[in-house]
Amino acid sequence: MPKNQQESHKIQAWSLINRKYLGQGVRVKRFRRPKRSQIRNRVLLAILMAKDIKLSKLAEELAVSSRSVSAWVYEGRIPSRNNLEKVCRLLGYPSHILFNEALLRQSPIVCQPTPSRFMKRTLAHSPQNNVILTGLCMVYDFSVTDVSVWIGVHPGTFRKWLHQCHLPTLALQEKAENFFRIPRNILFADCDLR
Image (cartoon, rainbow, N blue to C red; front, side, top):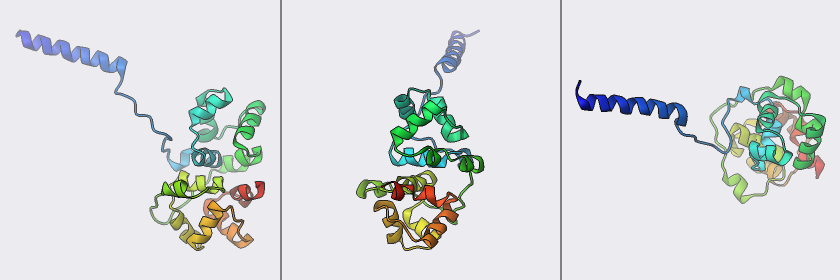
């Protein structure tokens, strides 16, 4: 057997061993992009994305495992009473908004008529007083302009809802509720909590 064939065989064996133990490398994103059907607690994820809080950072702040926090968001689990109080205190929302059992059971999917893309400059240039509504646009990667067209309001009006926390009329609240499939008392909770 030729000597260089033996050496190449050894190199291949070592590369397989190294690949097994070292892996292919890790690429960590800020937020993973789950399929829409995987998100059970859209409101909690929306708040975390709008406030730019990673799941691991929230877990660290609450002194719980990141797996637990991930289960709250992606599996719709409700934390223990002690952790529930800590989450509510840290994020500044009551438990019926963060962990609404009816929404966790349903987990409805929003149907978008056309592709859309959330613009990061929406966060950079303007204040975001309606964190939940802004976060939902981020979760679904919806452009503010597209959402306003789909709901049937002027883009400037929708921006007032986001940036100035302007509470719309009941008819417009109902349109937003029907589109996002989240009760209006949760969608516009930031307006009520101010």
